[in-house]
Amino acid sequence: MKSEIKKRIEQIQKGVAPKGYKKTKVGIVPNEWDIKQLEHILKQVERRVSKPQDGYWRLGLKSHAKGTFHEFVDDPDSIAMKELFSVAENDLIVNITFAWEHAIALAKRDDEGKLVSHRFPTFVFNEKACPYFYKYYVIQPYFKKMLSDISPGGAGRNRVMSKSSFLKLFAVLPSLPEQEEIAEILSTWDRAIELEKRLISEKKQQKKWLMQNLLTGKKRLPGFTDKWKEVQLEEICKIIMGQSPDSKAYNEDKAGFPLIQGNADCHNRVTKPRIWTTQITKMCNVGDIILTVRAPVGTVSIADQKACIGRGVSAICSKHNQNYMFQYLLSIEDKWAKVSQGSTFDAISGDEIKKLKIKYPSTNEQTAIAEILSTADREIDLHEKQLDELKKQKKALTQLLLTGAVRVNTQEVS
Image (cartoon, rainbow, N blue to C red; front, side, top):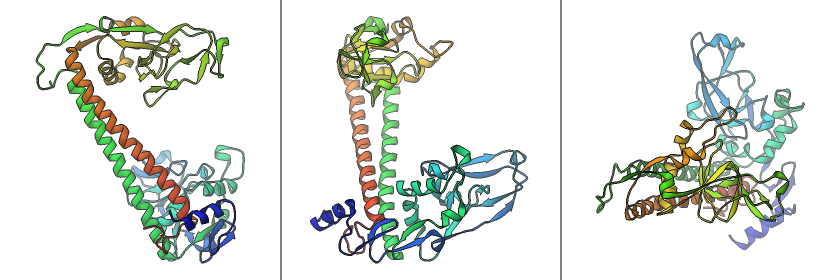
């Protein structure tokens, strides 16, 4: 980033208007950008239709500016309204009941023709406004605050947004070419993010196929022909069932040992304890597989430190290849629920874990299979990190472009 752009951004962040910028109701923006109330940018349009006699698709809005969703209404008579309203592509739609929770979105092509109630007013943009520019503008945190401010009341459905107040909100109005260029840049980032998501999904499907075939012996790796043995888990693993310390021994001062109690103490397949205990009961070691034995049952992680384990988990250590065992337990996570029991919540017993029957290959074949699956995990992890980085970069760029801190018409962004 050029030094003059960096300096400008720092000035704006401090509330100082650099040369060529001005302070406005919506913040510091370029001098040539207009500040207009939304009534000068868009208008409400009502496309009234009679309530269908047969089933129909209605459109809803996700909170937190997460977009639209569709729901099929089988029985129109269950809907009290006598008339509904049709949605068109590029409509700006707000849920007046949950505007305070940022329920707003720009209608996509597949939203065209879906129906909404009077609680979802639709607005169209005039010729000076690019809908895709405002698609990004209205989902910013500062716009959520404005929606919250014009939604008086207590909480939930008592907080109804005023449509007239909505049209009185102020927003930036750059030139149409600059709006379009900003929208295209951000759309490019969205496409890159979507491609990365699809790639991650494909990689996960590939790994799932590998697990289903390699861990069951359906597919054998070249050079391995030995027959697999059927064994109980306790024959090939050391299994420790957790025992919770007294709650009075808990602390957040990192005194004693970290305590792993359940799924909440794990993140991204690695243990991340939240509290510590000075009373030692059952312990796990670094590298042990942590298996949750209470709802949600069967989730596996790796202990990244020596820790005390509560009764919500067990610690498993293979006598042969630990990585293979981790991959195997990953492959059967959803199967534990079938054997779990409990009147208040699901749980699996120590005996059910110890007596689990599995087909087990030779140590060399375990190593080879585990390496293939671990390589798949590393690829997925790499792409997930790339996805996170793309999201962070897009978030930062969005803020800079929508405020004019970085300009597109001067080729500061290309």
